[in-house]
Length: 164
Ligand SMILES: CC(C)(COP(=O)(O)OP(=O)(O)OC[C@H]1O[C@@H](n2cnc3c(N)ncnc32)[C@H](O)[C@@H]1OP(=O)(O)O)[C@@H](O)C(=O)NCCC(=O)NCCS
Image (cartoon, rainbow, N blue to C red; front, side, top):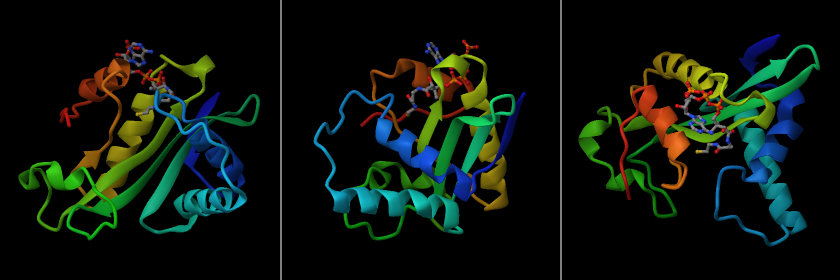
């Protein structure tokens, strides 16, 4: 049986592992991470379990007692000052609510044995409930143009494509 729940500290290693897999991206940084980079990455992932403006959902297979899918997100603000170039400033301001807040999907992954069973769709629909809870009306995600199946998935649930 498959159950969806909020992630907790027991999922920490799973989230770190999946994020490092870079599954679904053609451009990956093949270089070995230094110990310091590893530590920073661990801290970054941990924040999805501790920060009030971040979170993660897990789907687990209760038969094996193992997580088999996840979605990580954060509540961000389009008008915040970012130390790096962001795509948000290139997206029409009118699409954002007046306070600039939106939800950004950081990571979405489903174990290959469980794909095409609607699990990513379920995770994204759960995120819509979370958005309502945070009084946010826009969810942002990005993918490479080559990931046409991800684009199809998003369009099926009502996302609007913006190419940059
Ligand atoms: C992308 C991913 C999350 C999809 O998960 P999933 O649970 O299989 O997706 P769903 O079952 O909810 O798919 C919903 C719809 O999206 C489209 N879709 C999803 N995967 C597809 C594929 N491999 N080929 C074609 N269409 C696909 C289909 O329209 C599908 O509906 P259908 O099965 O009724 O035809 C999963 O393949 C994955 O984890 N990939 C590696 C990581 C990744 O790419 N993450 C996204 C980064 S942006």
